Amino acid sequence: MITTWSIPDKVEDLYPQKALELEKNRRVLVDFFLKNKFELISPAMIEYADNVSFNGKSVDSDMFKLSDPLSGRLIGITPDLTIQTARIDNYLASSSNDIKSYCYCGPVLKADTSSFNQSREELQVGVEIYGNEKIEADISVVSTLIKSLKLLKIKNILLSFNDISIYTAFLKSLALSAHDSKQLRSYFAKKDLVSIKNLLGKNLNSSKISKIELFMDMFGDDKSLKKIQEFFVGNKVILDRLKNLKKIMSALPASVKIIIDLSDVDFYEYHSGFIFSAYSSKFTSPVAKGGRFENLTTNFGKKRPAVGFTFDLRSLLFVG
Image 1 (cartoon, rainbow, N blue to C red):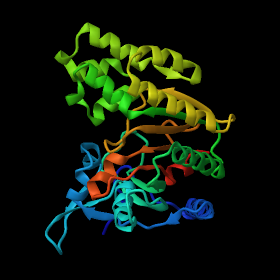
Image 2: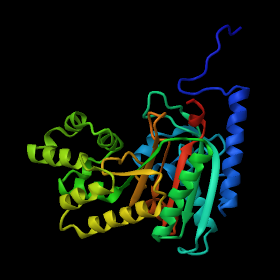
Image 3: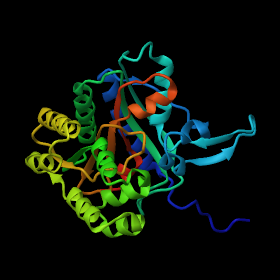
């Protein structure tokens, strides 16, 4: 007879009050998304592991894997519904520029978590737009996120904008592209120069360290853009990306605080271009993340412009 009951680390049961609150919030969000013309989908929770792992080492390390007794193949329990959504879109889209807008709310499991308090079991909410490469799609997705968080009564929202291509171009300029990893991105996001030095070791010299310090200091509101532009003077591609960030910032409500942070790069490898994180004063980790992910859509056959966001609805219940 079992006398002591326990569940695995970093998972939790929801008792009636919290379970009801979660369901009410889910309904509010889904109704809001449907009202705004997003089509509701319900992606599968399991996937053949090789269909997921090619999207990057950090996705692969987050995935629970087990043998499928029916096929004998290795299957994974998805850590991220964006991958399944991209596969669904590849089937539904009639062409590469066929605009599709999706929403979902489903369970995911993560084998690893970056935060001490983060649960391995999430109820992932997501909104994604495919087939629209224009900046209006980026603005629409961020606006939808802001409204979603306000519906959940999340206060003191801070948005952090970046473009992942700026980070990858910076690593390339220092001959460090081959060392890009989930761990390195996490250290950059934390502005942890000591850990970056320990990780890269002999690949760094004093000149590269100085440039990394300058890069990590590139953050602030739109007034900091001038300093960032001076850092990348002569690089037209990056300067154009910075102009796009400015356009998105200008199109959003003035009541929402927005910064640019070039070190905020702790994202899955499939992200490309514009990326963003949402923070709130009561949470120690980002409450939502999103951005462009054309790198992902290419893997399923059609190269499609794509942008979206996700957040864990369960985690928003545990802060009063």
